[in-house]
Structure formats: C-alpha cells, structure tokens
Image (tube, rainbow, N blue to C red; front, top):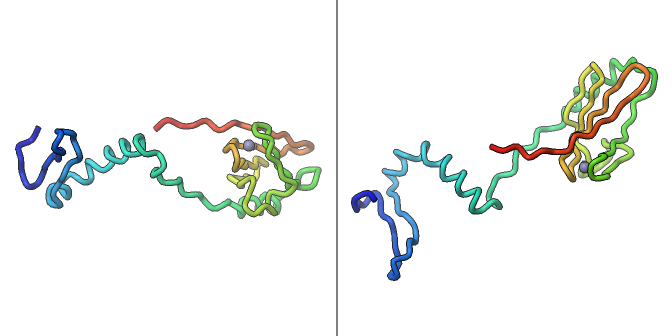
Length: 144
Ligand SMILES: [Zn+2]
C-alpha cells in the first residue's frame, strides 16, 4: 500500500469496501504506457463487450482478378462457396451484400481462400489443371 498522496488514492466507502482508485494526471502520464496494456487485458476479461472488433481488411479483389486474367484451368471459374462446417452457402460470393463469405486471398497458383462470415471457418478452393478441391478449416480461437 503506497503512502497517501494526492497523486494516488485508494477510495473506500463508509463500510470499508474498495470503490476504486484515484490516480493524478501527472502520475498517470508517467505510467500510462506501461499500465494501459495491463489494464486493457484485465478489463476485457471483466467486460468482454468493450473489446474492440478487429479491423476488417478489405477483400483482395485484385488478387482474384489477376487469377482470372491468367486463368488456364480446363474449366470456367465458379463463384459458389459453401461452408462444410456450418452449412452456409452462396451461388455467387460477389453478389452477397452483406457478404456471406469474404475473399481472404487468391494466388496465381490457384489457391483461393474465403472466410465464412457466420462461423469464421476458412474455405480453401484449390484449383488444379483439370479439377477443383474444396477444404473447410473450422475457426480456432487463438489464445493471446
Ligand atoms: Zn461456416
């Protein structure tokens, strides 16, 4: 317990119950950068609803378009996507507003990745010369 100071004061009610802490602006400015990450972690445990939503990256549509431009598979491109994990599906991922599946990546090797917006599974469409395979990887919560 630090000594009583105008910079740091633990507050108690009449019954002796801890009510909070007062930290002066000067003290706070000295510890802010170190204390804030610790406070945020503990706060998100106490109150998960204040956790910020991860920023969504824009869909890499240009990657998909270059794959189309160099399309040399023996079948035409298809736009249907289905999630084997939760059963969501769409006949054309580009047409859904809001998206049921978000494009996550497309490379010239023929790997196209989508994320299911209802269960977060990744859907991998692997294009080979003469055929296409589809895999569904259920979302795993990463521990931080
Ligand atoms: Zn799903």
